[in-house]
Image (cartoon, rainbow, N blue to C red; front, side, top):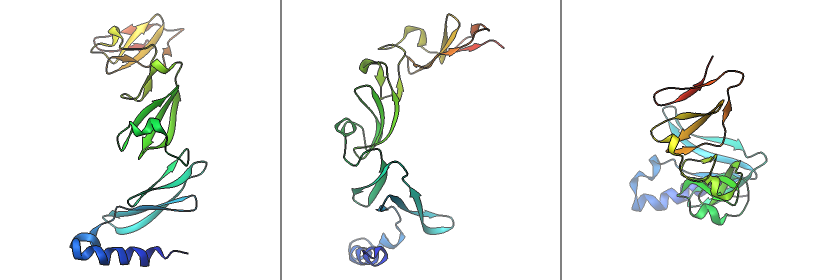
Length: 174
């Protein structure tokens, strides 16, 4: 069994020659089985927190990082995401970190309705003119939310009440 504290101490001793601030750093995470351990540094001092990855897998990403991932291997779609971001893989809207899927956020109706830039499935492909400068609009008796000019695929049915449009938004009447 690897003695993490001794390994970390030896690592810092080596780095102290190059970086005297090593003793003040706390930015690592690691796996112990399916448990994600993270070093925290807050007003109470330095310490370690643990989180069971549950149905996910604890994966060490290299460079002192680890995370809970949906799969044990990196997914090509997540390589397009920044270190932490969103991506689409076929119909799935994914949350990614370090190339791994950390969550499947939604399953979109079609590939062209997955929009990683706003982390939502769209009501229909492309921008929605009725969303220009608005947070929502009415489509018959449904309230449709907007984000960055796109209609979000989760309309709220207002019936039996009506959907009411206001200056920059819409809402279901009380």
